[in-house]
Length: 334
Ligand code: SF4
Image 1 (cartoon, protein in one colour):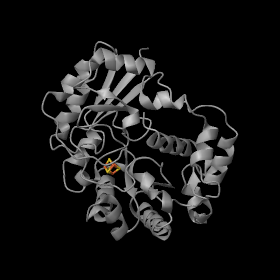
Image 2 (cartoon, rainbow, N blue to C red):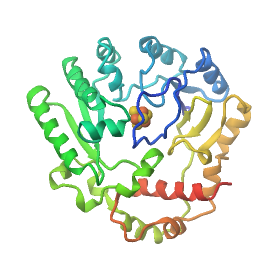
Image 3 (tube, rainbow, N blue to C red):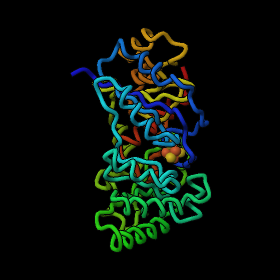
């Protein structure tokens, strides 16, 4: 089967400015009518299967989200965009028609994000009222027959609050929704979340009662162990383009590989100013600054130059690798 090209376009923006946002913060900008078909047509001669997404940050942030969803489906070529288990809690809390729409669209679960209790949640999301909205959204989903799944980002400053959020989850689950789900994790360390590195959770500080609901706990390492492993590795970073490809496309029509946050080394080109043939050649050949730079370095060197050998911060090895590699890219622009 032809590889699938996922076009993930920031057509409307996001109401939030989360401190952990892995995509990175950018202005909200509504793209002019016709931009969607322009983008699909740009790639049509080169890809037999294209899935079009009109959102990169907040799903369904535009008011005509019903028509928008149908248009995303219609624009896609020999493929269908997925709903995933994502939705806008901003909209769930204020739009009575939205949960019924999600249900009609086949959504069975929706993930909602927590950083702590009211003051902390509002500060991390960047909006007053965010905590109350996620609670409201939880109940509206349950009433509408959709299972909420709470995900919590834990760090050194919110440990006890995440325990309280867990207790609240257990209460709501017992009272209203036995199928409700919960997990906690440290999050990746790219985009805005890199700035939270100083308060990244230390593995030994993860409370015992959260270990059973900690995502990927078995593979979780301390930074010093990641460094130790990588100091033994003479291979270069391998971020290869093979099989299906996903492009994150900003409101400026700058298009990026989706391995990490949107930043210059990961940019393939611009869909307004670059000839589609040139853009698709770069994709086919992996002729992209980050991928070129990857061949010039080894994990051993990255661990030596950028790793903290005494740090107990918690990382999965893959998240740590991209964190190190991005530090290298930032310090070594082409
Ligand atoms: S994490 Fe999601 S909801 Fe938060 S600012 Fe980023 S895109 Fe918006």
